[in-house]
Image (cartoon, rainbow, N blue to C red):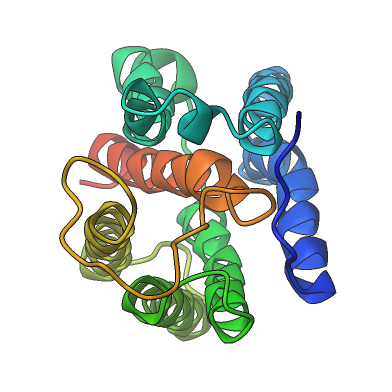
Length: 230
C-alpha cells in the first residue's frame, strides 16, 4: 500500500527532477574536478541505489507505518552517507575536488520552496514550512553569491567555504527541530491545526534522500578543503 500526498504538480516535477539529477551531479563533480571518473561513477551509482531505497521507503510510508521505530529512519538517513564518507575519506578524496562543484550542489536547495507551496495547499503547517522553505532558499542564495564572487578565481577562500557549510548545517538543524517538533513524534513540541505530512511522497524524498545528499556534499566540501587547501 502506497501513500501519496495531493501535492501540486510543480512540487512533484521539482522533487523528481532533483532526485534524478543527483547521481549525475555526483559523477560530474569528480569528472570536472579532474579526479577519478571511476570513483565518480561508483559514487553516482551508490547514490542511485540509496535513492531507490529511500524512494520505496517514502512512497510505502515506512516511517509512519513503523510508528516509534520509524522516527529513527530520517536521522539515520541524514548521518549514514556522511559517516561512510568520513570513515573512508582517503578513498573519496585521493585527489582534489573543485569547491565550485561542491558548493554548487547547494544551489539545488531552492527546491525547499516547495514546502511553501504545500503549506498553501494545506499539506504542511507553517511552523515547519516557513523555516524550512525560507532557510533552504537563503542557503541557495548565499551559495550563488559565493560562486558569482569567486567565479574567475582558481580557489574559493576558506571563509566563504565555511560560511556556506555553516549556514547549510544550521538550516538542517532548524529543519530537524521544526520537522520533528511539529510531527507526531515523542518530541512533538508544536501542535498545528494542519498535520505535518512532509514525510509522505513526494515531499518525503527531501528529508529521506535529498537532505542526506546535501549533507554529504557539505561534508565532502569540508574534508576536501581541510586536506588540499589548508
